[in-house]
Image (cartoon, rainbow, N blue to C red):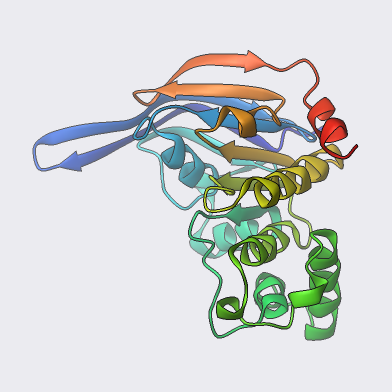
Length: 239
């Protein structure tokens, strides 16, 4: 079994003139296939910084990040972009759907950028959208969708193709309880099928879906809690 995500001594320091702001300090973290790890902590504790470093959207000041066996710091920009398209799925707080593309076209885009023929990309995107129960609105543009529908399209884009690592930053923050629970159920199910996920949240209810909860404080790991059976949450909410 190959570790999907591994961080060692992960540190990110921002400089503001002569001042240094430590956003993340000496974080070690492994995520195996099938695991959902939740990262919690107060605002400004380093949660989003960890997520950005995990996906190669930012570079660490010190330390290393490996995704699907690849050391991100050693990859050329084109190889890093390819690795992200093939292995990493993002769910941003802002969702970042392209307004000029329909839902299915948004989901197709990373596949097409990776050279997959349009017909194949459309078929795979359709499967991902069906998995999140979004087929009924896949042909609409983002401004024609509700918040929950846009969220489902964003989840489908994160899951499409061969994505092995899902990174989600407060993925249910703008949703009501029912739609929020549906999104978490989708992520949990995908992990149960073999993917790995890193979920940033401030909500203990969302963290209850995880196998482990990592609490950050001032950029450092303050505590790690193992959950005995997070899949029981999935079972309970589908009864």
